[in-house]
Image 1: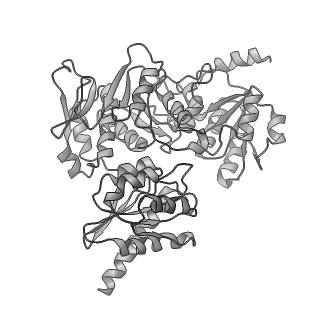
Image 2: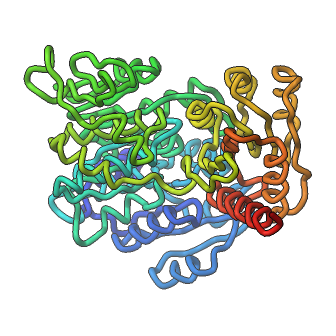
Length: 503
């Protein structure tokens, strides 16, 4: 088959009912999304080779059952198994594999198409007809909360909606669910967006889309903030109804202005200030929709109030912003405002997202382990007045100087975790030399949080909040951010139990 013939075949693979038989596909990795890709392709009749640098016993066994092959070994160079297989497509789903990874660099140099699992899911989205609409959401922070809120609002209105994507449920699993859905609410990471809309036939056309914010993150993958922003901006490409952006983050507005959208798609702003026409915002403590009503020039629709959100534990400013963004996306699909208001009375944030672990002797202990970058930590720090800050871990190429400077006035002290503490300690030395900053010894994982909590208790006084908002990834010492948060919570409860027993 000539390269022109192959390009024509690939561009025509736009349906579950297309002829996928015999297509040679390498799936890179053996994570949850990678396995879903391999399983889908095998079901379609493609010839599938999974290559991974580490085994996963259960998934490896299942690959044999579904008829896919597996190569496990060093991937710092292109394995002979890959070149001998002569793939026509490489599917990648994980940010572990950077664009310059040996297999991906080889594929691009050899003219082999590289697809993300999201592109594959879009191509076969009609397995259950009619195909679901997609609402796509990205941003440096707040993605998962906004996805869950949007899906909750849609479901409360009787829409068959599923949150999926980077939230943990592969898009392909949602596409292949036999019950089918009206809407998929898709969380997209910058890794997935990097590979999107590159190949004819695989361009995603969202019903509505949002980029919540943009701040330095994943620079080790993208190489620069500009490249990271360019990846995030892809979320708006081909949007059909509403491009939702953050009025407080001009980068997201620029993304919308530069996006190539379907004619008639609207730009809808959200923010914590007074909304203009076609915006969502707040007036006198009332969250308002001034976008999806006929007389938006002079009137607005009430969604809920700040008092009601605070009563439900949803009053932190960045959570309110997420609620406004999710409301805009849900309203673009005609969800009534009264449904949104009622749904918010029972919605609760995920674990490790500004989660109250305990309150004792006037000190609140808060787990925001999901604050894995400075932008997320910034939002968390803004929610409290006087803080003992527990931070540190894998910084992913970003610096903390600006964050330390911005919040110095509200810091009562800091406890630093992580294997590479020097960049964090140096930021405090430069900008907060008088602040008490206590490093945790680089011991075993099980010792990290008990020591961090003991040190934080030494610094905290009545009225303080001990806040785990690491501003860094967790994999240097923990399995993931959830493991980090769970260990923090256990250490807090153990400390308080000891205090109670000795008093």
